[in-house]
Length: 197
Image (tube, rainbow, N blue to C red; front, side):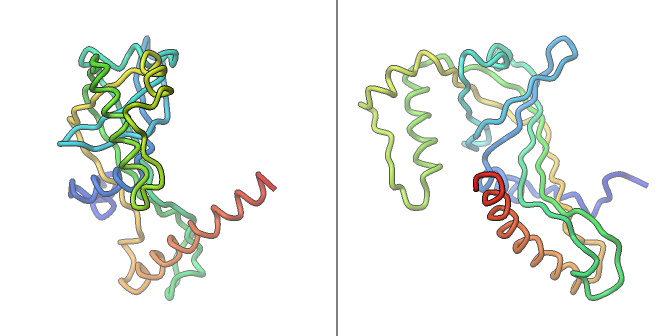
């Protein structure tokens, strides 16, 4: 049997792009001397490429140039699905939405491009309310440009893993989807209340 099952794969790039835009914090993985280097960064999808910024002191920064290979994971909502959720007899499972990408990364050396990219990323992340705008003449922005590297990733491989109880009856798939929405709202509040009480 092929793994993962075909019904858990979503090859529609528009669906994967929607995950990237809605959940832009990526797990970015590079390999150096057979050791993975992993950083969590927001990446913006722009004209078919991913744009990001990294602190120059991050050990992974030196690998984000020269057409190097990277692997990326974007994570959408996820949760445990209890058999009690379904209308028919089932076993426990875990539902999730993930996008796995492979790509080639290159540095963007221009400070002007970096500055404009930081402004554009802030504008994107501030949507829809736009309560804050990163102004081009912000002195703190100019001071920090020397400590940030900009890079772009050309995506070479897309894989959408959307495990959403698609192998169940349509009525059970709907119930699992409702549980995914509820669980993500409830678990975030419970976690924050517990950890930051």
